[in-house]
Image 1 (cartoon, one colour):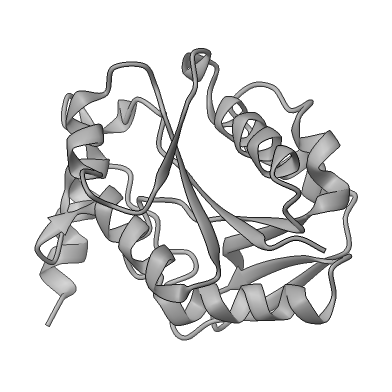
Image 2 (cartoon, rainbow, N blue to C red; image 1 turned 45 degrees about the horizontal axis):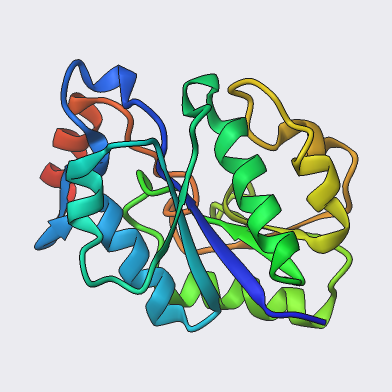
Amino acid sequence: MGEVHILIPAAGASRRMRGADKLLERVGDVPALRHSVDIAAASEAGTVWVTLQPGAEARRAALAESPARIVEVPDWAEGMAASLRAGAQAAAAAGASGLLVILPDMPEIEAGDIRRVAEAHQRDHHAVWRGAAKDGTPGHPVLLPQRLFADMARLSGDQGARAVLAGGDVRLLPLPGRRAITDLDTPEEWAAWRARQP
């Protein structure tokens, strides 16, 4: 059985940011996208892939000298499914045992959370493993096993992997607090999140 691959889907347009790019918002000293790559790499859970639209020079610059492998997504405008398809195809071609998806606009996810999900996959390669809030609300990261790669390759639109998860054996892994569901899409959400930081 191959290793886990980590997918950070970053080919979207940040439409709700009204002209700004949420993936370039600062998390500590680095852009959010680079922060996600850094924690993914620090988890040592597997190879890190980032999907990008053609061009995307600022996002590419944020990844300079990072360990991420870039997958270009020409049909990025379709929505999240285009990134998931590209990630699943790359993972399948590499013989990965699972694809662990981390959203780059979720700045509270930590390397240990990623490691915990990957370790659960090592115990059971068949199940879908999904991070959840302390109260059990499903969130991220999400690890999809190899058996679902073909289904992921058929996804379409901007609905993410909901259709694939609906028929899967999904097991929740509660993470501390709300970090599995803290997803920042607007300037106001980013500002409010920063105001809560120590």
